[in-house]
Length: 488
Image 1 (cartoon, helix red, strand yellow):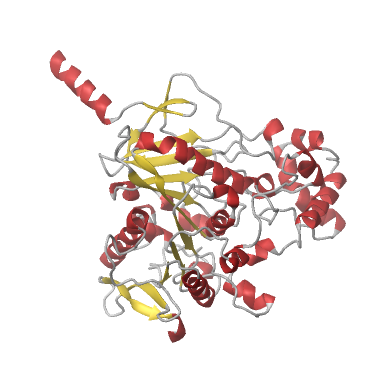
Image 2 (cartoon, helix red, strand yellow):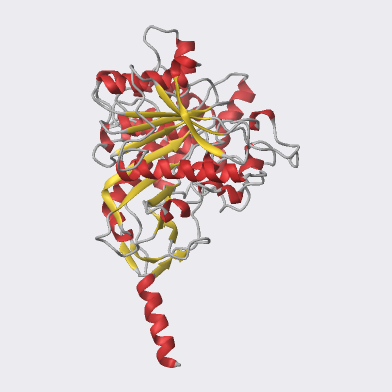
């Protein structure tokens, strides 16, 4: 019996090896649904950005002693409390770790821990939430099905809101690059550097990395694709519900409809204007220098802008989103796409039928511009209205139909975490979408190693792949025949 136990212990040790990465040694745990998938939760990828590190670029990981058992997710970035109703009801918030400025943690799902020669494709997921909320381990982002498709999935938390994007003249003065803001984007780029240095330990290929995100996560992907700091760290990009680019010679209102992320870039005309607005609020709150700003409590910094607006009956918004700073971001995504300075990688880009706006024209324009630069972009529309059995009367109108974010359950094949009355058609559609997304990560083509029905969107053939259920039978799903932008 002792020999058998020894062999079992030895086998377990081989199957789940101790990995050595930046900071120390870690060991993962087996995923819920797949015995051959391991998940590593809560791996620090930078030092906690607290105290003197508040509003600084991410710093090296603080080493730990012994073997860290990576079985617990890290803190989400600090944000407002989520109450039942709306998206909180849809995504089942409530089981996460406490919100904190100490949030620079990532998670890895893989089938090949310790197999450094395996070279599986890698995908980095960047969550949305308006740059002010959300986290990489929401229930819909369960990564085990990606790993089961032989893709190493990495999800991250990053700094949000005023902690991730605050500008201030004193911060720019102390910066060696003479800029402030964009700390959340620097976090995301740091996670890509972490992948470059460490992902081989998890069986991943650091030279085959896809970045993908939805909503503000898609906006983050756009910023990374434009940023010179991220070049060479990723090789494919997927933009989900982040708009396309503005059409030539259109009004600013039309531009914003085509690319909703533009409102983040154009809230302030430049970095200096953003810094001046922040300084006005911070001086009013008594935080007249960086020492006082960094000594202030998390809650005081988080609420300073709101209190200022209430007390002064004035609307000044502290920067809580990416801004063109001429360091992290040299220009807007639109301009970079048109002048050819955008990362020259394959793109997938799409939206949902009942999204924040009709993004189709802006997406089609992006695909045409990519074609003119010799690149490829595959476009899609998710058009499955989510089923609703009436068991959640608190669900608002914004959560009806194929609403903004509704495709996430399908892309991650995480339907089991949702209350919705899914049909077999939904499960089949989810499998098809997961396969297309993971094919893109593997082959730079959502069809797989060979071309197929989903063709790139071009000027001559402005095709969008339509993901929907058959209208005559909700038990049957289909990756619909391509629709053309001009058909709608």
